[in-house]
Length: 387
Image (cartoon, rainbow, N blue to C red; front, side, top):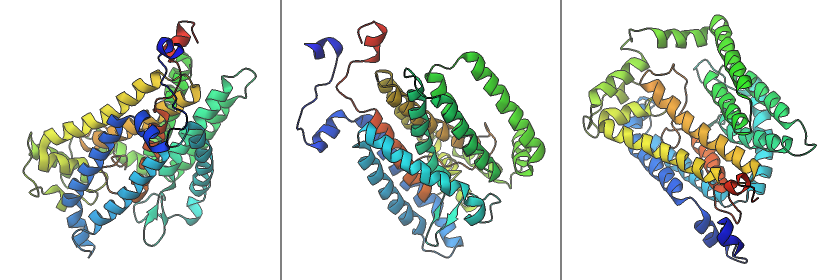
């Protein structure tokens, strides 16, 4: 009778883990992720062949590597999605500590691969970008601290999470990696807003971000060059943005045809940061809209499921993960169409990259774990005074 009144999901004691996982999982979101990965492989067949030829590898070298990394990402996603929120939190704290130390040691042991930003560790057979793994761990740790601060006589968790956020942002800016720094700050801000932050404080924070951007523009040649390129009304056709803009224009509604695109021969990052330009040129606006719809469906469905969640930790962590996932996709596509300055950020599950794929799989696995249905009343019951 209680379940009928409060809308709870029956907890079938002794139910095997796989049937229980499948019954409680958000199957629509998982299906969208699998479709995005399939689209990524399709685009990799087009975008990575010229790069493989330039580097002296076989034509499908990068496609095969993406299949390996993507397979590992999907396995990580499935395993993580089967975990309980408590286990996800515990493992996230350990993973965050390891990633935080790795990020701090980048200036000593890291490399820039000739790109002017020390963001990676070279492992010989592959590279590792600690910031990709740090993001989901930070979201969970910050949500845990914020949820703890809401308890009676709880610790000042919100203040601690903000100090942690500022330490991470400082290390990312020093690389420099302003895109990831903004993403981490955005994720913390979203969780703080959901936790009940006063609007005045959020406005003050937005002003501080603008001030920090002004300081960075005045003192960082790397940052200033990207902002100037974004603000310049004339796009140099020989730059990456120029090639991407032209490719999107040429693609039109239905594209120039599979394998007929030219941008992949000119863009060195066509398989990573500008993969959406390849999609727009060869498959047209139709495929781009499909990709946008898939990201939107994952984010919106996750947020609606989290709205019914009564546990503040799960609600905060899931919201942070969902919003960071969606905003990263928005930033990547916004850069390609010149709505945003260049950030060097991958398109989740579509762009090539070992660290971004595996870390993305872990992050979405966490999100799927947090959005699984559980035997509980809905948050609306609390608002009605029935919790």
